[in-house]
Length: 157
Length: 178
Image 1 (tube, rainbow over the protein chains, first blue to last red):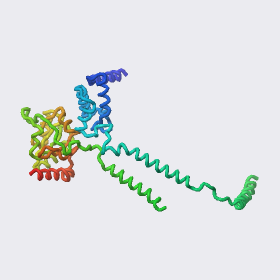
Image 2 (cartoon, rainbow over the protein chains, first blue to last red):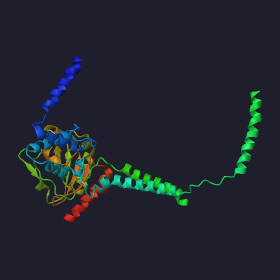
Image 3 (cartoon, helix red, strand yellow):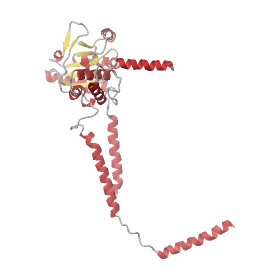
Image 4 (cartoon, each protein chain N blue to C red):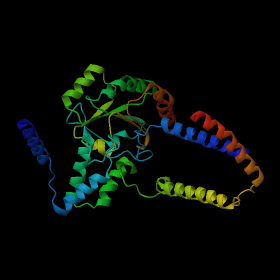
């Protein structure tokens, strides 16, 4: 137990040693930007989450550029110039990403259209029940009553 | 009535084609941001000597292959033989970009496996690698005589890729330049 505590403390100390020299609003921008940039090695993580060497390098670049007074847009552009729009987790709307942005709404529209057509067809269907053949119904019911009665009395006795 | 039977089959078939296409793609290989753009500037010492430097201007004047490698990179050793073969078969010089390595390790690697490079730029911090959009070694760039990047291989070169696309691309660029 004590070993575990010491381990955790050492880990905390290590992460503190890696802490960035930014403060306040700049630190908030640093974290926000890191969360928005995709790691190129482990591609389903942001560079904030990833501990790949490249992610560490990219975090260092973000830190240095914020310290140099660059804007978020400039820092993103710096990375897009090198790695393509792929590094952005929030891709801009353009001709290459139009399917990504419009796709869900197109699918929703198709789904609504199908539902609408089905409902219209159902409403158009005949609602009146077919005419009842009372004579035949009586006959069938009589036959069933006659068949069922003797059987059940025999079984019981 | 007939089309109600055929339509679901068509939809399933279209889905199979679409999913099959999705399966054969390699989502981990990203399109390069640098195709048909000038090679990013760099100015690095060579591995051979601290006095010598190599810059992006040294790439101009002829078709070159720029191979990003490191002694710690296992895949680089796998493609080492093919890089040598490409250079020998096409006569295109290979410029090495030694990425995040130590001088001693890099030199030992070249001594052990052979040196396919005309010159090696030494980039221990990886700063030039980031300027070139390198996400993982090895990566190989084809740079034409004007210093424009024309083709890029991410990851180790395979024999199929070498014969099917890399060598034809180099020959085509060489023919255009002369």
